[in-house]
Length: 216
Image (cartoon, rainbow, N blue to C red):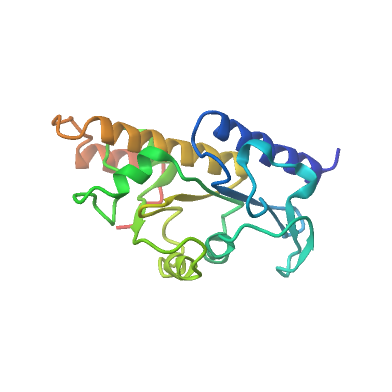
């Protein structure tokens, strides 16, 4: 099996795993990954994470021209923005995960640091997550909003919509976006309960010890 064939299978396997566990439903969510030749494999528009076909993934060459597969997701501006501004991005995942969307609608959520410091793992895998305002799905302005961050964030939360995460490869991106949803779930569970969060000193220690990209 070629490297690209393995990547196609991996994309579909990871997407189905997230679908099966309720992290995104129906035909929501999209996923992309870099190929060895600098191209992209992308989930097609209108497809379900539970039923992606490796042979029908959208294929772009290194110049951004579609060469194979079905029409791509309408959220391509989001994916392109991450690849263009983050040289380390090898994959991008976007979900409509319930708890992170709920947290994005809370009036006291910090737009510059979307996730509260509840556990070390979201800090380690995501750094700071930026909450972006609401955009119509597929609006190219979403991509412009990501570009305005100048590559300083690996993850953003689209208000009333869902998270988007870039990782070094497709497995890392999926692991990170799952951590984002888990942390958002914890945040919603602990609302109004006076939870003991990590202190600023503890956050700084984690950032330093694990060499986390932490935009101040």
